[in-house]
Length: 396
Image (tube, rainbow, N blue to C red):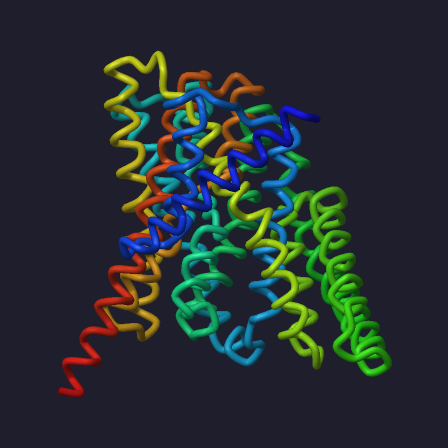
């Protein structure tokens, strides 16, 4: 316990200081917090390593971020962007899946359909299908763009993308293990989850509205709202196999119309900003250990990262452009979708357990998470700052 208190203090001190310094140099705070994790972790100083307690705090951090994003969602904008978000999500899964499969095949040879090497190639593509929305959310919040039409589209697409990614994972695992019933089961569970979320979300909304009218602007309102968030996150993953962050986001959307939604969002953001989100971003750096990488694996990792990033930019950006966004906003959409996170690690672990990939590929996945986590907020900030400069020039 004392070791955790020491680690906790170091994370808050170093990562928050670097986050503030990062902001002063014009970069989003999350970049500094991730770099802080890299410095403290085995990659540089080896002052600490991730553990179950740090991972738990990090998980709470991402749930709070997603719940807060849901609370700030404009339901009218969400309905308006639904079709575009869905098509972006589909393209954002298909293009990286094909790209990753071809990359592995070019490196290790094309294999016949149904062989172990064929499924290994497809699995490499599967690893890079899912978007990690948390870093994009934090960046858009910091830039004040989370509730714009484009911001809502990106967040919605990332949530849908995550669900589609899990369906693809289940299909690949089912095919590789010779199981045929799992595919129908995952579709059924996904459908049942959204029916369940609709019913439970409506009930939670009615309950919180009653409490809000009886005890307006009191501490019990955000406390009970958080209880709803955590329970929905738990039920989403344990009952339906849907990512817990999806459950947290949907509960936030369900409570977005409550009178005190802004008050709840403010209280949640305060708790997240002070403790949990710095640990979440630091934990990305703490999980990184690049020792022992061979030259071949380094080359594969570089191409793997390139395919993963371009796959989202090309797939999602193209759909955004066809849906009416201009070139610059389409590029923002693609960049906003290119972050990868814990889902990529989870998928990698499943592949390792099934003997579809070797543990050496974890280094490539970790590098992808680190680079996409740093590049996404930097590029988004540059592009949005460019918009502001353009508007100022137009006024002149």
